[in-house]
Each structure stands twice: as C-alpha cells, then as structure tokens.
Length: 605
Ligand code: F6R
Image 1 (cartoon, rainbow, N blue to C red):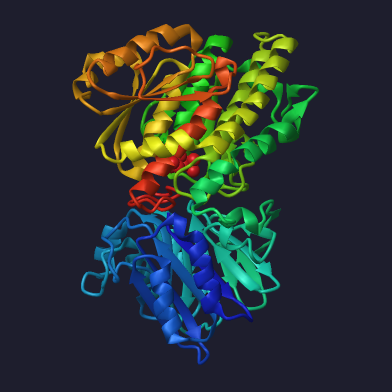
Image 2: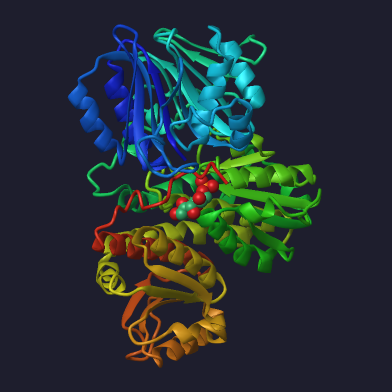
C-alpha cells in the first residue's frame, strides 16, 4: 500500500518522480504528492487528492526544476482522502513520506504536545513532528531516535531543509528497495519504479538508515556503522511493466498466463519429474511432515483452497487452509511436524507475514510461494519457491494465481512421489497433465466470445452466484472474488449442495448462477443442483469440459473447456472466470486495473 519514490541525481527530478509514481500507482491511488529541493535549495511540496495524472497537471504548470525529491501515492488508512492528508507532510525542517501504519501515533501526539500543530489526521504527520523534535542538524541521529519511538510498520523517506540534495530513508516491515544507477540514486517501495533505470538493486535492510545523494547511496546501521547491502538482480524487463498495446494491465496479465506457467514449471522439471534442487528445497521437508497448513489472504488463499482439495485425497494427511489475518491471532495447532506453506504474490502482505512469524515461533517448517524476489516473506521463510509471473500490476490478481497453483501442483506431485503415494509413472503423468493445461488456457484466452456476451447480462444484475463441488467449489471462490473486486457486483461462491440450506432463497428470475461442473465423480450431482436453480428462474452459465452432453434448456450459456484430467481443469476455468470479471468491469466502464478502495500490496492490517 502506498507507493514511495525518492531520487537524487543529475536528471530532472520532477519527471523521474512523476514517472515513478505512475508506475507505483497500483499500490494506492487516493491522492499523490511530491516534495523537491529547487535550484536554490528551497523545499516545495505539491499534493493533491486523486490520481497521479491530476498531480502531473499541477506540477507541469509549475515547471519547477529540481535534482532531488521524493513522491508518494496514497492508500488512505489514518484520515480520509483529502489534500491535507496526502503526503508529503511538512513538520518544521522535516518533510516526510510514509508507507505503513504507526500504531502509537495517539500517545506520541499527547507526549509531544502535537494536537495544535497537526494539519492532517494522519499518523504520518505525527511521525514527521516527532522527528522534527529530535532534529538538531544530524539527520541520522534524529532518525535513530525516531525509530526507537515508532511502533508499527513504516517505510519513511525524509528530506531535511538544511540538507539539500539528500534523501534519507528507514524501514520497518514495509518494503523499500534502492539502487545507485547511471541516472542517479533511487529508492522506491517496489521494483517497478526502478526497472527503467537499473537491473541491480538492494532491499533496504530493516532498521537501517539509507542516505541518497546525487552521486552515491550509503547504508548505516543504527549505531552509525556503514553496511554493504546484498545486491540483487531484477529478472523483469521494462515490457513486463508496460501495457504493450493492451487496454488494461489485467487483460495483458491474463494473456501472459501460459508463459508464466511455463516459466514457473519448466525450470523445475528433471526427467519428467518435479525437482526443487535449485530452489534448495530438500525432499526431507516433504517426507517428514505430519500435516500441511497453508496460510494466505484473498486470491492466494483461494489457491490454497484448490491445493487442499487436490492434496488431501492423495497424501492422506490433513491439509488446512487458514486466512492469515485470523491465523495470526489464534493459538494455532501447528508444531514441528507441520509444514506451513505461505502463499503471497507480493511477499509483503502484513497479515501473511505476521502469520509466518507465528508459525515459526511454534516450530513449524515454513515454505513460501512468492512472486516478488527478495520480498520480506521470501526472506523470512525457511524455504522459498519463487513463481515466475513477472510483475503483476493490475490490482486484481490473475497470472499470480495461476502460477501459485502451478507451484502448489508441483509440490503436491513431488510430495506424493517422495511419500510413496505416487509411482514414478503416476508422477510423470501428473506433470504431463499439468503441462497439458497450458494449451487449454491458451484456447480459452483466444476464444473470449461467451464471456463478453455473458458480461452484458451480469452487469444488469445485483448478485451473482458461483456454485461447484469439490475442486470446482474451490475454483468458484476465486471467480466470485474476481467479479466483486473489479465489477462491484455482489457475488458469492457456494458448494453446490449447500445452496438449498438457505441461499437458494435468493435465486429468482434472471439471477445469474455460474455453475462449474468439471469433476466427473460429482457431475450428476452438480447437474441436479443446476436444475434446482434453473427451476427457480436463474440465468445459468454452465462451465464444463467439451464433449459433455447436457439437456437442452438447462443452461442459458454453456462454456466448454478442452478435455483435461479433472485435476487440471482449474487452469482454463480460471481464465474464463477472470475474463468474465474483466468484461463485466469494462462493460460498466469501471477502472479495471485500479478498482475503488483497493491497493495491490496490503501492508497494513
Ligand atoms: C485479489 C487479490 C488479493 C491478494 C491478497 C494477497 O485479486 O489480488 O486478494 O491475493 O491481497 O496478496 P499477496 O498475494 O500479495 O499476499
């Protein structure tokens, strides 16, 4: 949440900051602002509610020249959406931007007698004033004292009036990455803002102070000693962070799924079997555990639900899926015998991170499935399996979900093999089945006809229901979430047999019911459930494999996926569900990539 960028160097800071904010806008888009030193070293702040484009108009009118500054795009937490609450915040000689939440801001306000000074309702402005009160000309010393007093998550970038050309930063939990590049020194809340300038970067170590000047970046620990951070390589290119002719990032990312699947699966295949040697994940991890516990949020949690339905029947050990925000405050039943699988695209979701910490404290072994290299969750887990989806910019997750599933399917296969639940031949056949799902996804991406037609119907309704059984139920959870978040149509997913225990009361004339029926062993049951809703007037959209015979009039729209083994139908089904949500959002003329109230990385509770 909240995008941060800081720059010091020979180029025009304004265009670098505004360009960076556009790249980071998916992190938050309630308001945006920049602060910069002008050519006579005076600090200026420009901030506005609304999107970065609105800020750009104002900044361009000002035609300011600068070589050092910082910018922020906000996702409101403390305080509503207003110009005052937008960042940067000024406090005496201090200018500060913040990503995160300061939990003790209220007591600090009282302790430092800030009530009459504060212009905004934000916790961030409190941090700025506390810093100002510690400041007596030595930025590092003041920041060190600030860090001692802050409870909560923060990534701060700071300018001091009497230190022109310099940006300081510190982080706790909230991410910051930085790089010294031929264009100057840059710091940002995520890599997408650095990609245009460099391939080499470092993750700012927690509780370390970073100083950017036009010619170097230095990192210090809180005792003031210089630290050399570990340099990492970005394996994305600029194209990956651009729309490349697609009207929206979401559509582009839906199209990228087959490639992302190959990138995630193929490097981990040896002689037709899954192989995690290069990831440093030993078979013993899979052999020793007595149970599996998956922890994640939102779409990533739905990937876990699919994996549970896939794994439990084969492995014959308990597989539990927990919502991270619940798990972190529980007294969970995990111990040394539990393999905890943490799933997160960003690797920074605060609840998932806290859940990881709790699981570790109970002695569980932790394996993270993460897309963003070097992210906090990736670094703090015992083992990490990176998915290779490339940057996901649209707020609604698509390709990250597919590759999370691909990774989980591979883990399931390896685990079944090493625990003697699969013969070598069965494991090979499983992996072949997984690979066969890729052309099936391609087919669904190319077709897209029914989804457009269907979306036209959906957008006229207030509710939509998704039903399925077994694996199909697990897929439908994600379909409902996708539709809700970008089309704002209420959607709910139900195990098809559960509908008649209450929810069927909501089915009336023309209410859309998206029925997923790809699982052979419950197919007949599913069709009975479809008949029940049809009998009550529902508008039925039926998703099945091709070559399936259904009675005339049972479905209003029948979408068929290529024939696949039941275990792999999620992949083409996911494409259909994503496209349905996408076209519903487009049909309602909504902001597909940046839906209201949401942000890409949820780094606050
Ligand atoms: C929905 C979506 C979210 C995320 C969730 C977890 O489309 O993207 O539900 O899946 O916020 O995020 P990560 O995977 O970054 O931990």
